[in-house]
Each structure stands twice: as structure tokens, then as C-alpha cells.
Length: 112
Image (cartoon, rainbow, N blue to C red; front, side):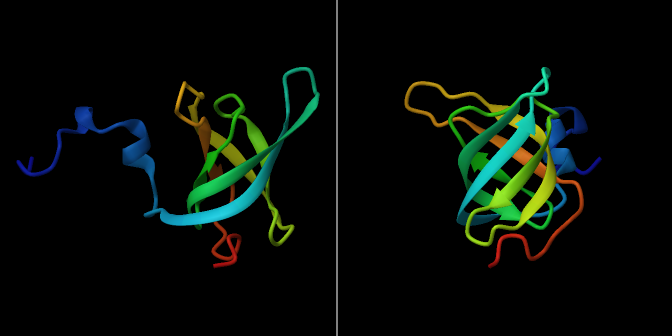
């Protein structure tokens, strides 16, 4: 193994799976999903990093991990199906958020 590469056991599953470099963006979005009881929930959020494969969203109340959801770009009204792959719950002085993966890559979703 190359001594400059980290040992595979030290790589997080997230770092190992990311398919592209995220670009800093600022796009208002909404994320909607059905909870375990079938109740539709919609949360306003802000995409702060994104690419053709997904994004990191800042939001107060992130959905559970692995939730299937719909992400809507509020600038263009375009929607895309996503899966929640990372969740950060809010803490004092730290905004909560979620990493979402597009179910199908989309180069044009962010309108950049």
C-alpha cells in the first residue's frame, strides 16, 4: 500500500463513496418526504454544496437516514428524487443538515 494513502480502515464510508467534488453553492430548496405513518413533511433548506450527484443541505429538522425524498430547487421549481445519506442534527451554535444523493445524476439541477 502506498504510504501516502490513508489506510482503508481510516476512510469513512462517506469519503470512500463520494463520486465527485462538491462545489460551494447557495440555492434555496425544499425537501419533502413521507414519515413512517405516511404523513407528508416538507422542510425549507439551503443547499450549500452540490454537484451532479447530490448536495449538502442546511436545515433545522433533517429527515431520518436513508429516507427517500423529493428535493425541489425553489429558484427553478425543478424537483428530483433523492435519498438521505448523511444526517447532522442541530446543536447549540451549529445548524443541522443532511447529505442527499440524487437517484439519477443531474448536471442541470442547480442551474449554475
